[in-house]
Image (tube, rainbow, N blue to C red):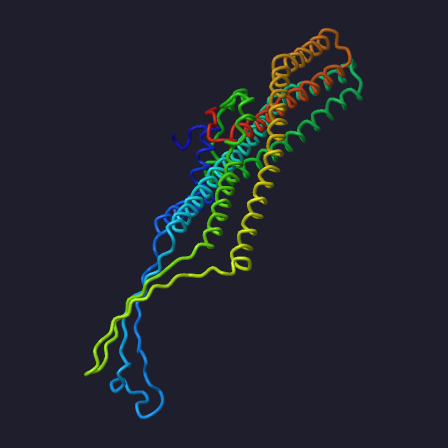
Length: 398
């Protein structure tokens, strides 16, 4: 897409996601967690053993390395062998970390897309408000001129002329407020898009379609990114319990040493096997297991709490979205045309009889309010749509 092309909502969302430092950091975390899976579950590195053995420290042979038959120079290697179950669980735990970071990356990605969409919608609504207000200014300016002419001809009172002028001044102040809001909305958009936020905005989508039916948004709530992070945390907590329980089973190691002794003493080889003795599990392993189980219960309770709040929030947003669709349709197809017609009728009546201009001023003010309310409702509809559209990686292309 050319840089000067109108910025669509879809393009803004994808640009925000592709340039987000937070997502780049989360992607690096995913790569780091994935790299650790390779080393998880491997045997520990072997250990080199070098030393002196049975060196006398008292008597006539003190500190001699060659005159005592038991003294030797020792070199060897030792290898620990954790149980295969432990190694498999450690590899599984590393995989849990990958799943968790991936789920967090997906959740962050959807959140950034949603926030960028909300920012784009706010900027679009703010600029549309300015355009529609500016389009109505000639009508109020004409009313003011007509009122001034009516006073000059004696057909209108000075109070009616002042009322028309006050309405124009208040309207222009409203335009200035709207312009400032539009500038602030553009600055907020730059937070996500940098220089691309300065591009003209394309037309907004209708916001009346979602990627999946609304009933599936609730029935498939477990697939939402914010819940999948808790699923990954639960799997990690269960693996931690299994690892803690595996510590009650002993590991073993083997050591092979070669001792070189001075002539005429012969060299010697030593082979040793060692095995751990988890004899005090009540004070060592069992408390750790209890702690890991408590952490699992904590995550389960947090997930249930989030699930309930998330379900209620989605149900409320769906209800708002459905209601807003009807209200937007009512405003845009009925109330806005009616307000415009009322203004035309009031103006025609005034021009034909040169009666009071007050009905024209009132009708114009009502038309402005109706158009602004219709625009605000479309913005609310867009915000509800953005929330529901970015709950999972099935966002619709507007």
